[in-house]
Image (cartoon, rainbow over all chains, first blue to last red; front, side, top):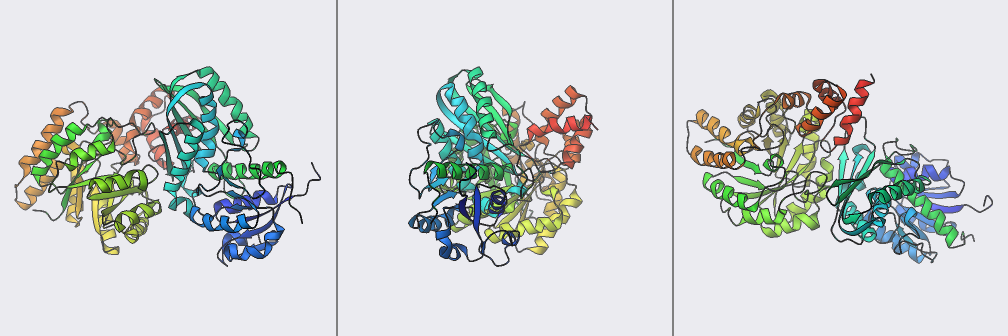
Length: 303
Length: 332
């Protein structure tokens, strides 16, 4: 499909997530970054891409309105609060949106689970809203699925992530509750279990720590060998879009009836250093969904 | 009498030492005695605060609500207080039920360099009329200028007091005096101090904070708390009564410590060679069991290991890093 026209996108948000997305899509032939949208004239995130992106906009979504016809879809890397109004505008303009905030408006989606569980399939409409949930959600969901498939009756799930403090921008810091609630929603969706807990620890250690997520699952019974095989298999599949995704502790019996496993995510090291695996996994997933959605809906909406 | 108010963390920090087995039955018996002692506030809950019962840091034997209800129905004059860390607790799941239950003081705690994650929680509680303390944990890990900056954030969000926690038991009385006065000079806000006893300086540090005008002083009966334990509450009372020639209520505090001593003889904290090493290095002393096991296994000196953990600024919740650090040391 070398000749497929590039997917034309805008990125709203010039923080850690937005600039990393911009950097990686500028280097990805499948995409054309038409616009990068910030809210301040002196935004360092905009300055970083001067001369590389056609429209550098400093007046928020209003500044993007005249250029909507040049776009297929939008990546929203602002905040859960701002995403509400952004989606209203973009839905009316028939754009698809990949939501990187923990707003919980769109369909929660984890690329590797598409087609594996009924709740997770690509949306048909061109104007669709996909929620990338959270880094804790993206990193835990594949392992949770792998263990659940080999288990009977899940009665509790806990997902705890530690991320480098330096990789958590102001929106994340202000949004810890939304992060937790959004992650818990995804865990419930995948496990079918209401008794779920998500924890996020910001770690200022030096050198900065790689992102780690530990998943604890309370089950009535589990075929551990099958769970381990499933986990190794699904990690290989995730690595296709997140090369730095690793199973560092394979599923084991942590205590009677409780299975535990840990994954580590090393970032690709685009805008932020490698320790920012939390940003890497959510951005990699978003890019993957954009590609899948566009090929599934059959059109790159030119003209 | 001293001007500082005493804040009893036995039923919260002590829950670390009890590996979170605290029961509402014990909360009731303890609070009955605490109520008579005239202690200002009693903090209750999981060692890591509201919503922290978990596989990660340990499951509580009873829910936050059960423990708090036991305390609420017993405490009349003494304030009921909770500890709460954003990232574990949320407003909806944890803070609102605690407010509804009638908790008087909320301590919103973050690692010392991460005060900005407390904004939503402090603002919410302050807007709902609660008395909110901003807590800076592992407060030795940044300099005084940085400390003031972080305290300023919490003050701006609506905290009525800033509590400095010496979570690793690293400070000397001089360190404490400099930090308490540093914040008092920079901000119109009450300052509190929470000691750990790794170097045996818990009481001395608490006294230093009192002399420097700290308004709130934390202590635990028998020092029941994480690692080498906290400053012993009964000894803070004893020491301050010596200084002020007032022996008003030591009896009731001794009743509280006796209850703890008799109830949990196998959980009483003390300073050990390991807690001294971790205190000197300024590392969270809860890592002691892992450090000992890994140094035995790999033949790395515990003192060297603690020191390297300090160099890497290890904070609580990084158990999996200790082995990696030990292996790095072997490869040098």
